[in-house]
Image 1 (tube, one colour):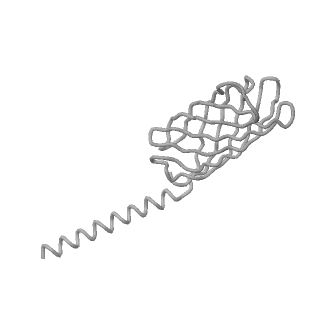
Image 2: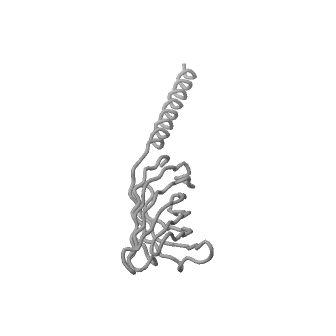
Image 3: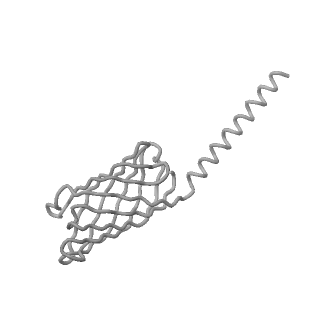
Length: 161
């Protein structure tokens, strides 16, 4: 009788554990919308052919991400004076892991010092707690000092978080 009770308890525990794991997997498979903000600084003007630049900055995202640090490299393709395209590869570092991806966007100067940026974000993966993350969204940025510093907001839809 004791042995049957032990086997039954083991089976119930296994079923509950598998059910909880399946529930957690289903929850992380659901897409979640988040809005992140970034305060970025260029590490100098774009240089070389094609023009490339590096940026660092602070990141704030809701929920399990929290506050972190941004590192990005960009290639700038001028189309006309004061406007063009920008392609960015980025990585965001948080206490619980990272996520990485790309931005394909455009920029336009609205005055000699003001620049607006907009683009499409693609999140391709991560590490740690965010190793399953994928998704994307849109980003908008503004600069009032010719692009040396940018304030950005990204509206993202992510799975795997």
